[in-house]
Structure formats: C-alpha cells, structure tokens
Image (cartoon, rainbow, N blue to C red; front, side, top):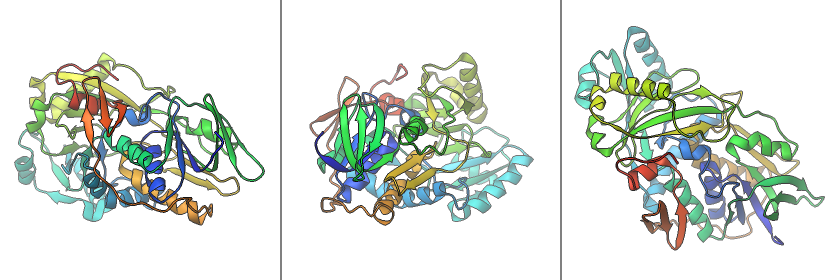
Amino acid sequence: MDQVFDVVIIGGGVVGCSQVFTLSRHGYKCLLLEKEAHLVSMASSGNSGMLHTGFDAPLDSVELSCILKCQQQILPTLSSLGLPYSKIGATMVAWNTQQKEKLHQVMHRAKEDACEISLSQLYQREPHLACGATGALWIPSEAVIDPWLTPISFAHHAKTLGAKVSTSTMVQSCEQDSPGIWRICTNRGVFCGQVVINSAGLYGDVVDKLAGVQKFRIMPRMGQYLVYGSETKSLINSSILPIPTDKTKGVIVFKSVYNNVIIGPTQEETEQRTIPFGLSQQVVNTLLNHGHVTVPSLGSYPVITTYSGTRPATETKDYHVVPHTDRNWLTLGGIRSTGLSSCLGVADMVAKIMKDRFCLEPTNSPNMHLPKVDIFFTNQGTAMLGSQEYTVTHPITYTGKFDKKVCANL
C-alpha cells in the first residue's frame, strides 16, 4: 500500500475497534489489521457482555481509571448509535458469615458505587433467589450490552469516517524505517504508518516481540458459560454476583441484553490461546450446580447452548499501556475480562498519548457526530450495518437474535 496512515492498529477485538472508532473521530487516518476472517473473533468473542463499574479493580490502577472514564460515556454513545443496553444493576450476595465480612470490604472499596441492602430488600428484589443469604450489596450502575454489535458498530462508524479495515491479515514482521515510518509486513502486503498500536489481545506479546519491545507475557485464562432461553428472564432482576477473589469476580448468574440467563464464567489457566470448542461434562455440571444453588428455579429449564472465552491475562493484574516514544509504538496488553467495560476509557487515554507522547497531529478534522446505525440481522447469521455485511461471532448475539432453541458453539 503506497499511503502512510497516521495510525496502524493491530488487532480487531473490542479494544482495537474502540481505538479505530475514537481516533478516527479525532481526525486520525487509521488502518485496522485483524488476522482472523472477521472482527471480534478471538478473546472478544467469548466475553460476558457485562459493563462493570470497577468495584473490584485495583485501586490507582490503569484498569480502574479506564473503566471509570468509559462509564461516563459508553451508555450515551450506545444511545446515540441506537445500540441496545440494559442498566440492570447487580446484586452481590454473601452466603455465610465469612463472605458477609468480605462484603463490607467490597463496599468500602466501591464507595458510592455500592450500598448495603437488608435481607428483606434482597428477597423483595430477587424473589427466586435461594434461601440462606447472609448479606447483600446493591450495585446500581452495572449494565449489559451486546458484546458483538457494540465493537462492530464502532469499527463500522470509523469506516464511514475513512478508516480502513483489513481482515484475514496476519502481521509477519514490523520494521521501522529511518524517517520513523513503520512498515508492517503481512500475508496481504505491506502497510505503513507513523504510529503502531498493538491491541492484539491473546497474541499481544507475540506482536510486541516482532517490534522488539516485549515487556510482558500472555498467560491465557479460560472462562466457560451456560446459556438458557429467554423464557428464564423473570427468574432474576439483576446480575447475581458472588464475593470476588483476588483473581476473579467468580461465577455470575446474569441476563444478557436479549434476556437469556447465563451462568459463568469459570476461571481456568490454560496454555491454549485459541477459543476452545465445547465444554466438558464436568464443567457443565459445575455451572449447573452453581445456577441451581443460586436460583433453584433454573433447574426447571434446559440449557440451550454453551460457549467459552479465553482472556489475555498476564503475570500482573493491571493493564499494560506502554508508549515506546522512541519507537512510535504503543502497547495495549493484558486487557482482560474488563476490556468491554473499559474500552472507550482506554481509547481516550490512547488519544491523549498520540498528542502528548508521540506529538502526532491528525491528518483530518475531528468529526464527533454519531448518527444512529441502520442495523438489520439476516437469516444467515450476519448483520447488515448500512450496506455492509458482518458475520456474527459472539454467541450472546447469535443466540439472542437467531436461535431460540439450540445454538451451536461459534
């Protein structure tokens, strides 16, 4: 390609799509490269679709800062684009004395994001919840969105502003010419840009190594889910959270934006970076038991599908947002299960880094207008956004929009 882009973004998941969306609106001439045939195909195709408030994120972390920034703007952005969301709230439930003590620790950290409710209030809010709870917190700002349509709409809007998106494009090498222009060699040719953003998710450490700047190692963490039909929607009125641990929020019983009750995710360390197909019977039984113990009425309904996701965890809890100013290379690594909750906050941070650290001015004028997206879901498992067709890659969207009975893993 003979043109030089202001920014080349490697990786077309939630984080990459958010970058091209925000930077294009600021006027940067952007190119997004994705190695898979479709956007939102790897880690981002297996998340929960939940927007978390950051109540359990490390204090003073990049993660928490990005979640809080995203919280301020994502729902208004979804409204402007005409995308679905439900501010369902979350209820964190303690089931014994020890968990109740930890509940107060969570409330202290969450500050104004959570408030304690009485057991009578708990069972008024959640009448189908199992008996025996010892305490509960109400977290009103937790929400659910469409985890596929949101990033796809971000990328689609960027394209209307002139951004280029190239799928089935595997990055093979990264070289910087003496004038400071990056040459990104791929299986589909060479692409050039002034600044490169690595948002390659599960392969973030691999891409950083191509540029000679690797500072972290991906340690994949798998999460698995069960999905019920939308006839279960009346069984819960909010997302039912367990007490979080240092490593995970735990297994949640929640509703998708399409009213499918979902149980998950598990947390399993793995060496596998690809998305696994199918759940073992042991995992299914574990999740079924959690659902039935938490909301006993779920036992009367069949599971209509299962799915898995693999998170790009690293050896540290916080995100790796590392601008290599001497190289014009920006690493966005280790953005794990909260990537959807923080995506626009990360993008805002990146836009600031472009000017303050890389001194990169946009080629075009800013365009902050957000017209509603014209969306039509076809019968072939695709969606038309305007005149462009996109393949649905997330089971939550697929199940909610297409298959009400039995949905194959995607």
